[in-house]
Every structure is written in structure tokens, then in C-alpha cells.
Length: 351
Image 1 (cartoon, rainbow, N blue to C red):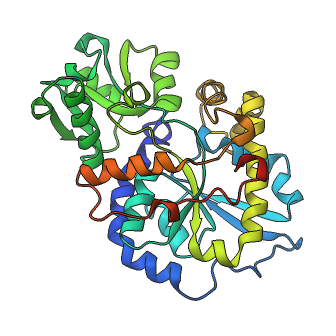
Image 2 (image 1 turned 90 degrees about the vertical axis):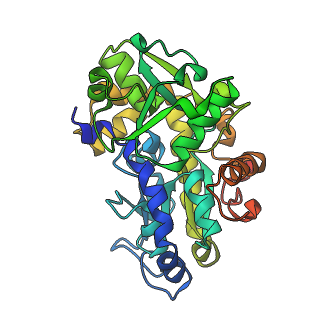
């Protein structure tokens, strides 16, 4: 599997910082006149309402519910012609803000700073109920817990969120965060750098690289799951689905129909991960079947604590993540988190 394919989830993170530089453009586009894919009059030749979904990067198992809903015809049954697009270098929020997408996969750590900069985007569902990120290191490094990161080197994108999370974890575990080194390595195959000793640990997504390292590549690694340290750092939504304030007002019925079908898609992915993997692999056959199938099984029980309430967001999760970003110096001003998300588009049982 090439580094491009294996980084399907990892590569999205630096775009979240860069997106803020585009805030002025996004505000103007999202608040401006009609046109774009958000126009209610956009119809396919079959009379279906066209709706574009921007992924946060290349297709992966986080997106399985959407691919499964599309494969089973549930969007068509809802009167929708759903097109799934990758954002390229622009980023999913830019496509959303400029009207080139109606819905976008994104994350809390992207939406909160964006709203602080005046970008009118709103989260309309979580995708995975709890954080599935970890720090990973080769077992020979001796790293087993956050304070073991003292004197070690982190390899990543050089983002401030990465540094804030690592330093907070080390400090919370009784270590000295000033002794952690950081090096910017960008989009590379992290195995190579760790094995060469260029850096000691990296941030991965358990449902993708975590499975690839342990189950497919059989690497002797140790992990520090973020979810194990929620006394120190937030448990936040990553990824999630978002739309624009303009679309919420002008195209609410189409978005509600989209979410009803999407809920069915993720509930089906929970009940039948094999079907979810099959839908994704049929749409994107170049993905590694072993990775996709194992990842679908891993995510099935993690998409929601209660499948009947898939997608629901909790205000407390939003408040805690916003507070962490603020105290870490990553948020220049407070935001009204109640306006950053909504559960109103979910079917009544899931609100």
C-alpha cells in the first residue's frame, strides 16, 4: 500500500490549520448570493436534488456509512442524487464555504477556530462517538505512558494542536513537557522514520494506521490512546459532518433527507461491517481489502454508544474542546458553542 493510500485520514490534519487563512474568503462566499451546489433548484436528469459531499481527504472507513447509503439507494429513495468528492489541497471547508459542496466531513478542531474567525459552518452530526487517535512508538523505544515521552522526539506536521496535546499529556502524567522534542516531517511513511530513529513517536488513527501497523504489517509497537487520558485532554469529535448556516436556512429539507439516509447508512455499517467494507471497496477498489475490512469491524461498535442515536452531539464535548483550544492558545476568542452544532437534522429518535 502506498504512503498516499495509507495516509487517507492522517493527511487531513494540516489543512485544518491552513483553513483559517482562508477565513475571509469563506465568509464572503458562504454569506454571499446563491449558485453553487447549494442551490435548491439543482436537479439531476432524473429529477433528484443534487447534493455534494466533500470528504476530509481520500476515501476511508470513516466515510463508510455514506458509501453504504449510496450503494443501497437510500439517498435516491430520499429524492437525492449524492455526489462524493475529495477536496484535494483546498480542504473540505473551503468547498463548503464556496458553495461547491453542501456537506463536508471535518472535525471539531477545525470547526471551532473557523467559527472564531467568522466562518459560518455548523456541525450536523458526529461520525464516531469517541476519539480514536493514539500516539504510537516502536516497542523498543520503551515508551508505555505519556511521561515516557520525556527526551523523545515527536514526528508530525508541526501543528500547534499536536504540540499542545503531547505537552498536556506529558505534564498530566507527571513528566516535563519541555523535554519533548518536535520535528516536522509532513506526509511520509512514519514506519521508516521511526525505524531509522529520526523520531520516536507519531499521532495515528487507530482505525487506519493502528490496524495497518499491528494487524497487517505486524510491527512491534506500543500505543498511548487519547481516550485513556480524558482526565487530561478532551474526548472530541473527529470526524464529523458539517454544512453552512446558509444551507441550514435555505435547504433544510434536503439536508434533513440526507441525514435520515446517512443515519441508516451508519446504522447498517454498525450492524454489518462486512457490507460497509464492501460498499467502500466497490467504490474505491484500489484500497487494501484487508485494511478496509479490519477497519470496518473495528469501527462498527465505535460509531455510536447507542446505534439508535448515531450522530448525536453533546454540548459538553463542544465546551470542553473549545476550552482546551482556548487555554492552549489555539483559539483567539471564545465562541458560542451552541451555534457551532445542531442535532435538529437527525431523525427524532437520535436527537
